[in-house]
Length: 249
Length: 325
Image (cartoon, rainbow over all chains, first blue to last red; front, side, top):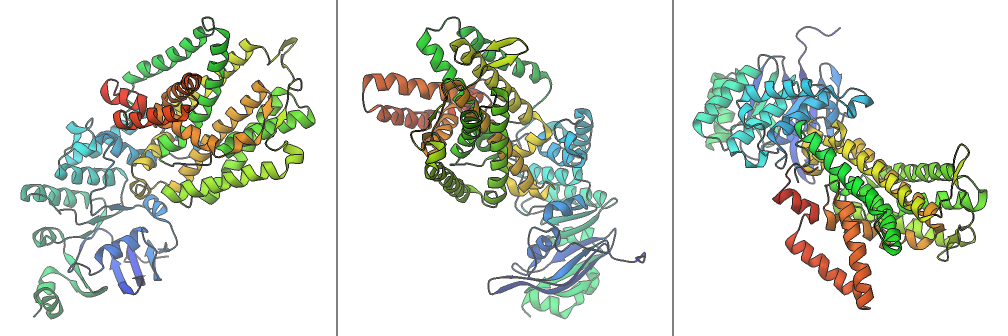
């Protein structure tokens, strides 16, 4: 029986090399249920690689990923989504030629398609209801009939979040969600992420320090493939290693 | 290509259009002179083959250059069973379908590890293996001479009723029945939840995987459906035209459905039928005028790519009927 304090997610000695480059070197990372955790670090620190290893888009060269006490290292990415590990892309990756509604509909139907029969017939009202809920939460309900590719960039970001929401995430991994957004859009997204965190644990990579400080109580700092610091914002600011990495001091 | 809008008010219009096309073909047989009557019957079978091809190219985004193996697997399974074992028409059809499905499962498990150009080449190589196998065992298959089944294809029996497949009206209406079934099947599949996933894979496979779908399994489903429809077309061709030969397993018969589908509009339900009809008639008309009719066909294709890059029905969808599935 796992203790109450068991982490939602844990990586043990996780490594990933691309040829001779060690993108992630022996990372031991722990994430508790209900957290909003930000990973920061300079470009090339291995943040996105770590996220991809957790979500299963990449396989590690060594080490393991443990989720809810279960070793999921060998599980393919689509299986992990079913376990509640949902990922949003750093570079917006919506279905540009499909409608906003269908983009979210694909996420919703995956949850409802249980058994072979549902692959060929599914209750359209149930789908439409959930699609509407997700779009309503991100404020895109009015745009449901538009092609996703014609949405302004900020709205495509929100659509990504709606697709993630509709996938019933338990662990939501967001890769630079505020990238390319205007300041008022960032404020809206930060509020939305805080709202989502009531039902899901959030792990985000973020360069916008204001957003990081607004959201997270704990911050993980990566550099050169390793975790160099972890703690509260105040601890991170006072950390000499972090200052060296960021200020070159 | 926005093949998945799919709101219910459009359903009536969509089914209405497709039923109208089928009704048109049904009526046409009473007007056509004998030559064109036979030609349209052949077009309908070949269009069924293209419909199968389109399930993979148009709705899943996988371009195969080896579909002749599925088409001819249906042909050979049916043809050899009729020729050597004297099986009935229905049994022959079931055997042809089963052979194509079995082959599609095996080929899919191997080739679907690849995508893009690699998939194109691997499917072409397997189809060449199949083609050369039909030549190697020419003692059984008749090689490129083929086997003529005339007089061996048993009539269809409905109770005490017997229908000879050699009669032109029977050929026409059987071809139409098979086309209708496959057309409606495509329409149904592409509007179903699973079909929407196939379209999602075509649009963005990585995204689809990260939404939690097992992309490999869905591609396999698409390939098996595509192979089954192609094999069914081959099987029916053999029964109606009493011939099976290795020329149908050659590379040309892998290229044809690709051309027909692109000309008519990949990712549209009616595209393969339109493309097959157009191309067959272009070849027929131009070969009557000049020996270098392939030049005219080539020019027609270039014009099509310049003016209608999404094919005839794709162009219709873009300009007028955005609801076209």
